[in-house]
Image 1: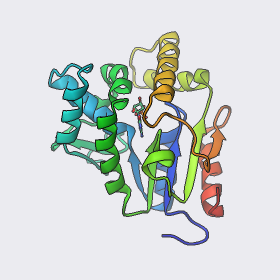
Image 2: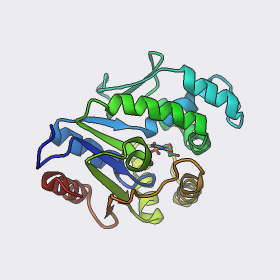
Image 3: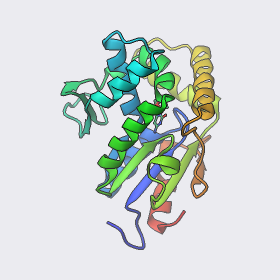
Image 4: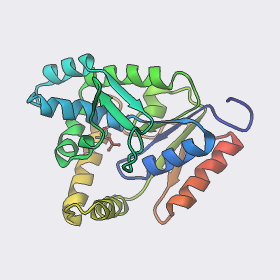
Length: 231
Ligand code: DC
């Protein structure tokens, strides 16, 4: 749907735990658009590499794997709180992608240029039909630079770590705020300093700082931009 009041493709980029998935999913639902979380694709490559015993530092092996596997992201196939279902060669890996060992290695995997090339091709194919909210790090800058509306969601490392900490506690998982903050800063550094497609706002992105905003307030702010049809 492309008219003066709506945008056909909306990109949402920003650092980990800035609220991209909560806001992206809600905006997609309100508009009846598809929601595509591209981070899940890098996580899927990481998980399958770990499962197959591939050394994560072996760039050639991980890159070959990324070119071989078929990743599908579909509407949820299970009513267990998931936002979507991730299938790798028809195996449901949706929850495995959230494991701490994936968190620990995914920045390294997503820094490999060959992995990125393979994932970007799949992302463009999936979003190519339009009517999509696409969430990631480089969507507005690299994957879909012609998108109608580009948002860059930001929040301080402390606020983002607090959110991750609470999410883990809500799921009854072990959570250590200091360790989460340390890991958040490490990932920010890796995501922002990699050579290919580093994390940064597109020149024509609107920056939304979610520090001190509730999820509802942030969703409303993005919906207002969508309805204005302008950056
Ligand atoms: O959003 P997330 O935490 O699920 O992302 C997982 C990792 O993938 C993170 O290290 C950043 C990386 N990523 C990326 O490099 N490019 C994207 N478009 C999406 C995620």
